[in-house]
Image 1 (tube, one colour):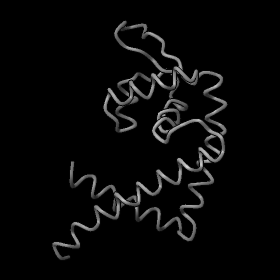
Image 2 (cartoon, rainbow, N blue to C red; image 1 turned 30 degrees about the horizontal axis):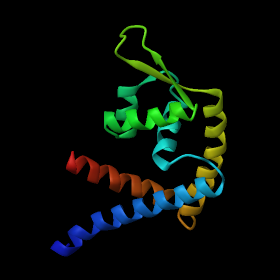
Image 3 (cartoon, helix red, strand yellow; image 1 turned 180 degrees about the vertical axis):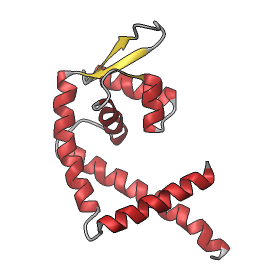
Image 4 (cartoon, helix red, strand yellow; image 1 turned 30 degrees about the vertical axis):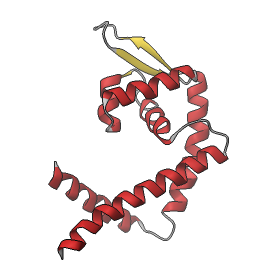
Length: 143
């Protein structure tokens, strides 16, 4: 691999991620779902882990704590999530979806599922496995 080729994989990953995010945002907006992609990611990580701490949510979403706090502030304002003080530490909060959050998650998941299917059109399960293997190797190499 030439020096130029070594740089191009990062550019390809970066531009693909940006294009996917843009495609997802358009899908959410076109379907009347008032969420950003980042808000969707946070909602989707709360759904299977009701009561998750803000710190764990930051780790799970690979976002820094201040970013997660800002996103949660917006989701609380939209009445999609609620914070509850942790029983064991009054400085920590556990996060739950509200009924409205549950309903919006269901609607958004349908749209996101369609987007995922469209973006994967023409690719196989083996392609997915290979992509995950490659991305895991790159992740490990830079960790």
